[in-house]
Image (cartoon, rainbow, N blue to C red; front, side, top):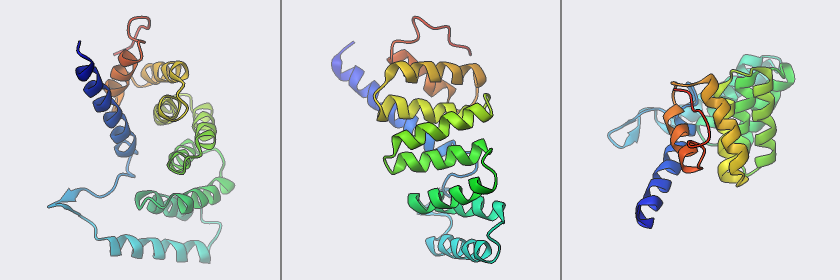
Length: 188
């Protein structure tokens, strides 16, 4: 194969994985685009954030509100505020793999790859079938820590728990690119 073809395949895979990470957040994706604009105006997002901020100010023990505030900040790409809101939710219940994973994504956005790695590992320890934490952990290893071996190992486990779910085809392509397909039995 020509070098140019391999380059374009690699770029397409990288873009696919990154889009998959952002879109596969299970209900935390941005509003659908309609006619080139977000379906929900930015002012509504800010109003929603303000409403939830008032809720947590009035009831700091409301874990569900802290989680929703974290999601609102996540969706509006306010990473530091999302990390803080998720941290409050985790203080109230530290054993939520979904919140740990969402916070890990925000750590990654901030460039705090070690913290993201810790969150994804803890989320997967709490729930070994938590596919999203494995998916994101592989992304951190592959693209942020440049550790293809650990990415290969984690993504192989991802395919064991999620052989045909969202993102599994992207991960198979990543493993093929990393040279894992010839030596690993990849479940379908």
